[in-house]
Amino acid sequence: MRSILLRSNRVRYALVLAGGVLIGQLAPPLWIWGVILIAEPSYQEATYRCDRSMRAHLLAKQNLEAAPSEETVRELEASEIALIDCQDYDLLRKRLVLLGLDEAALGYMALRAIEAKATDLQDVIGIHEIRY
Image (cartoon, rainbow, N blue to C red; front, side):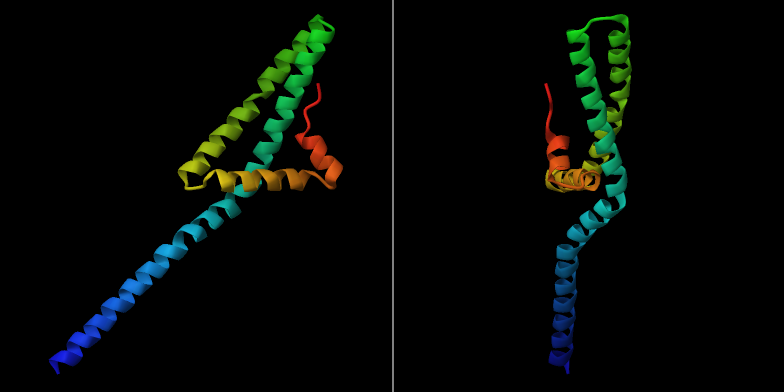
């Protein structure tokens, strides 16, 4: 009787251990997938806004160098204020890292953001290209 009881306890412990290992292996990928699923729309929007702000700032700097005037100075100042979008993007990125996402997951979401705004290969090239 005692050996049956010991055997049943060992089986129970082995099942609990196996269940714990299974949960330990499945929980992190499911957590990451869930965070990506929830955060992806706002991350895509933040990525797009920051990219657009950086482009506008670069163009404003080039315009100021090419034709200095009060108007181009005001355009540059306005584009510098718009760079706050990049601050928002960076803060969101840091929060997502704190929630457990790594660079690969953030890169995945950034690429999906680019794909969401691009309809063909030329659009993707245009998004990645910086013109001088």
